[in-house]
Image (cartoon, rainbow over all chains, first blue to last red; front, side):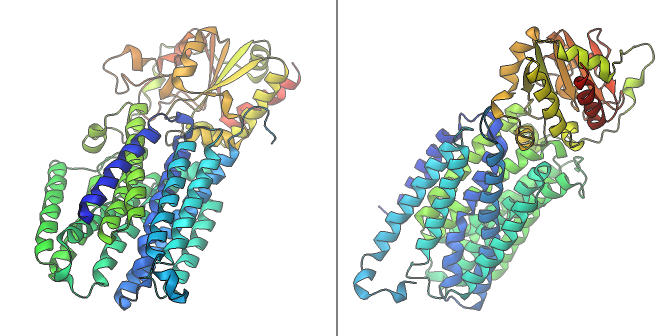
Length: 96
Length: 473
């Protein structure tokens, strides 16, 4: 099995899992869910680390550096702001 | 960091990294799952962030990663900006925040694909599959980047919220997309031709602008959600280009989840995805005002003292908040009124229309910020059967979402939109400055109903007066 076919395989399976995971989410959580999913898409930081750190010349390092800055904003800011929102969600009778 | 490890470790390190990537993926899947319920959502988000941390740390041990100055600098700068933004942003500005973060994610993926080209010395030797995915990642990442910034501008108001379009723009956009895809194919045969690369990048950036500009401000939440899906897809494609399975899987998860969320939001806003992307309804100019000042219709007014008595002796009160409530920063005072009623034995519930805030679920966040427990917040389907047994409905800063014309008048622009059936309650009270029309620019027959009373004035001041009047009941 070539590398591309293998990658396609896990891509399609992951898509199905993504569909299943989200299909029954209450409207109350739409906003935090969107910002949380957004933070996860910052996973591209892993690619940015490889590009910036692999000694591929100044051009690649600059591009990788900017990619890391952008992806880190997405990851750190995204998870933090989602947490800030979800922290406020309390059930009746929970401790304030 | 692998250069600091002993030789014996290096032989099994690549496999270990893959296994740990698998663990990170499991954290993401479990995290997204837990994000689906209010009781577990916070833990879900934390699990996902742990997964991210695992993925980042283990990547530092990849044998390809040999220098760290740029990585450390990038992470420090990005974290600072992210932390400050996340701490400072007002909850009312969440749509803008999500839009702009999304744009950064898309840009990062496009840059990763570009960087993959930049660090490759012999482009001709690159696999065709790698070149295709690099091209597609640059395309989708760039569209996400500029598209998100246009969406941000529309939400923030420095780009007109109106649909800016001209005949044929849709065809130009579709034509450009096909042209870019064609150029990606050409690029795979001639990867050293930098001109083709620049055209792909430039046209993709333009498509992001021209495809979001024609969409009205009210539809931005759907657009952001769709762009979020794209940013996942872009990350996944970058993963194909780098042969990195963590990127492929996580990107695909976000891409699919974003798409489902887009569909759900379309349904909540009574729009089809096709209609959002290619239609032009949804610009809110608020222009066609004055339609409500017509002569012969009469409204009944109420006062704080009168209303206090009505609600204090009711058995069930439903509060319908609209975005006007959040604009007036009156969530906390609503919560105080509700607490006083509960102390008197009145049952209080909140009926939340999906588009009550500036994006689906936004009003829930704003009320949660004011310490309203989430189990008192009811969705449209949950609250509608309850209105018939409700004594008083307080409609604060909402208008179109309670307009019966959505059910009764087929010619109306909001016809078919699911609304809160407040007209079934024994009494409705509308908190409003004046009889002006809502975003959709149409009159609301509810105001003139015999069972309705208007409480004119600024929402916050009216609620404060009501809150004080309740002390004397």
